[in-house]
Image 1 (cartoon, rainbow, N blue to C red):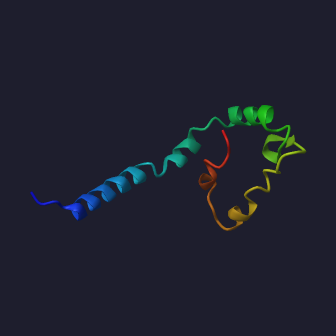
Image 2 (cartoon, rainbow, N blue to C red; image 1 turned 90 degrees about the horizontal axis):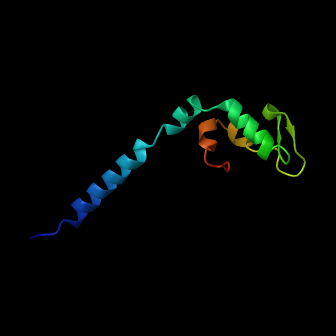
Image 3 (tube, rainbow, N blue to C red; image 1 turned 90 degrees about the vertical axis):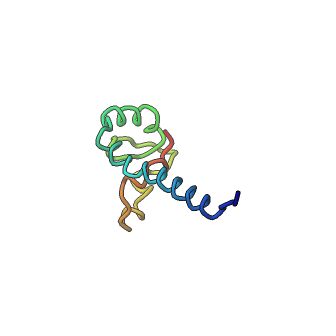
Length: 89
């Protein structure tokens, strides 16, 4: 029987691409179902002592100012969903 490494490689690449693309758009769903108030409360309790974040009303003094953390990418047109996964949960 003759081997078809190219066909197998193409099939594998297509399958991997389909799996990768099936996860696209999930961040938008996560945003629409997020419990913003619970997240804000958790941030204030666990992160606000160190980090400044105006939306949470925190004035931390030792960690990075999170209002400034992604200022440049935002000015360049990056979407908020592109920052998901950067923040430690």
